[in-house]
Image 1 (tube, rainbow, N blue to C red):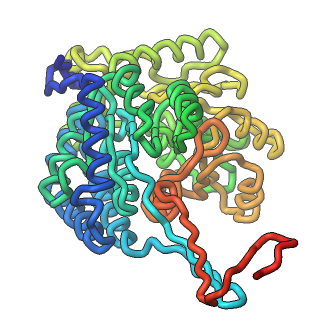
Image 2: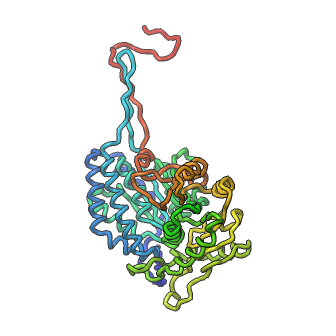
Image 3: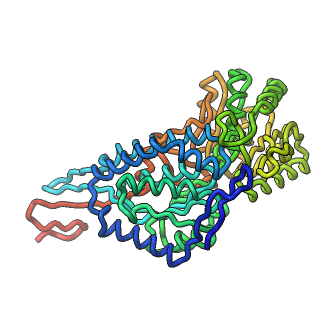
Length: 476
């Protein structure tokens, strides 16, 4: 069965993909298992794996405009952003290419002519499920460290945005990656995804998506004693103090809230503003938001495109209605864009709520869309409580010239990444992941390789004598 892929910009069909059957998913898993155990990939040295990753990086670099165009066409993110993501993806493959031949264990000396050494071994076949907001970036974050460590992969992209992942798989094969090492299976999560993560041939699952789906996958993995790493979203607090460079903070806050139409786990969707500058901040924030250039995501001048899919648009509309019912003030936006030029697209105005209480639904739930809540604060201790009041703990930011205050708050804020006087500065070299319900495990940095390795301990006795380790036994 084939499924049409729809452009959120104009509603046109831009491609079609097959819905994999259980038998076809099983075949992909078997291909990956063969390559891990007995195939060409199983015989590759770490240096050879490194060269493959470097070759993939070069291929992505050469084809970056095509990849960015496919991505923007499929999920509505503006091409300026997707081109920037391509550079990050290239950097990611090169980083893990350089790390591939540096994965090592320890040597631990013992007395009496014995010593121990440890090895870092690949896990096996890794099941990966990626989201629709940044398919290629999330794919790179997952497959590059997994391949560097020597694993094989079966990856299911979102049913909404599979086209760029399929293209990247093609480039990987053209770059020398053996058939069966990276397998793409397409289809619905409740069929293809469930079958994939339930297989007893899968050594680990790496998932990025919603809490609801994450809990289901974790339950399946728990029943099979299968490790899983998950990134499950966020509700980032973006904290603005009166002593900050306000113009910098405003510009960053607009990009943090509305970049990629707010389809980001690290979106700055809760802005905490010190009361002394609340009115000034809101005035500047709305003024700059109104200047955002909305339009065709493939136009280099465009700064803001459509909502990625109908399901997400309906969620955004519903939560805006909830915000109004609970008493928040709609300061800007809050509705679909009525311009006839966009009548076939999924366009929704950047939306700003003021007079928001921390207990309101729009301040608690991840909207994953272009809706921001502005909350005023005075007391630092209450600010910390409100910032930590959500179930998420992925990321956030502080804007202040008082570094002592920033570091003091850092000790109390519950999140995996904190930015100080900047926002969304994410590097392939630094671990990224969440606390609380934002998930567990880390992507990027050296820790990402550890997520796809297991430790083996080897003990060697070269004394030519029999040694008994437990107390009370004597050596013969």
